[in-house]
Amino acid sequence: MRLFETRRQEVVELELAPLVTMYTCGITPYDAAHLGHASVYLTYDVIQRRLRDLGHETRCVRNVTDVDDDILRKARELGVHYLDLAAQELARFDRDMLGLGILPVYAEPRATSAIPEILSLIGRALEAGVAYEAGGSIYFRVSRFADFGSLSHLGRDEMLVLAKENGGNPEDPHKHDPLDFVLWQPSLTDEPAWESRWGPGRPGWHIECSALALRELGETIDVHGGGRDLVFPHHECEAAQSESVTGRPFVRYWVHVGLVGLDGAKMSKSLGNLVFVSDLLARVPAAALRLALLGHHYRGDWTWTEADLRLGSLRAAAYEDSTGELDGEALLDDVRAALDDDLDTPAALRAIDGAPRGTDRGPALALLGVTL
Image 1 (cartoon, one colour):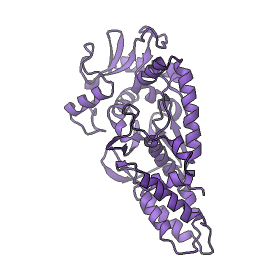
Image 2 (cartoon, one colour):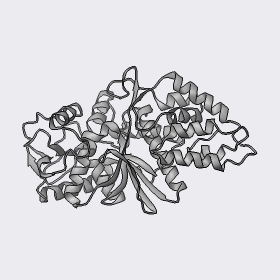
Image 3 (cartoon, helix red, strand yellow):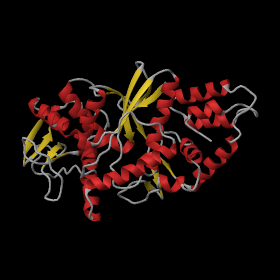
Image 4 (cartoon, one colour):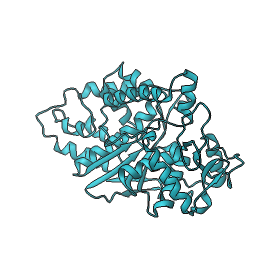
């Protein structure tokens, strides 16, 4: 199987052991799952299905960021406890993923479950000299990690812009370098706080995923990723803090998914231009929505329109009589070849569309997770 590896910026052949470990960044549960989320988790779902088809065992961890600036802000606006908000939205998210036919994850750990591991990881970073305490917070010192920027391939000015857009606060006067990032911070009076040797506070965004990944899967993960918007700062910072402490590669293959847009802009909670999975599943069968998403290559950015849903529904209707007297093994091999070629799901669907009349399409559709 070959996939585009973000750090190397090329399609590479995966060299994997029988057990494949995977980590994909999960949701911050303060709103419903949208199509951008669905596209990411569907991509990792199809990767897992093909790897299992090849004989591998897969263990995919998808975290839940149940404490960070966004969920605390939304809970404050609604006047509810942040964990109650998280529980409500996580239940809705899990229903959406089940409805879309996403394989169950190996683990779905919450950031709040890893406070001891987070504190330990920060302590190790301080001992290694790659972190420092200033103004009541603990920061990672990017100058001590020579490979900082090697994942995103961005220049310093570009990093500063993205850090500011994603809550990195480069103007923080306590930072030794504007690109340094928070590992631990004091909590506001209405925010949750945990005791630490640096005073009560809460974790920064990036440290949560490192602690969870190391706890659940070990020091080196085979495949890790998420949406392309997470490459910087989130994944760049994850790799820096993890490798600085363990001394080992954090991820063997970084695999990122293109962004889904609506009305000319990236679909995001901050912009409010969202199409929710639950709303679409109330209108069409899961197979139609799944086929609509699979019609786009995972790496490309694309814009959602109703035409996608119509095409998915037409395909689902055409595939309804998927069993046939003709052997579908040749078709299955064509779909396998398409998936092995950088997860080319559009090519896989074209192969299914073009199969001779009477071909048993069932096995090929099952490999894509399409249940009619």
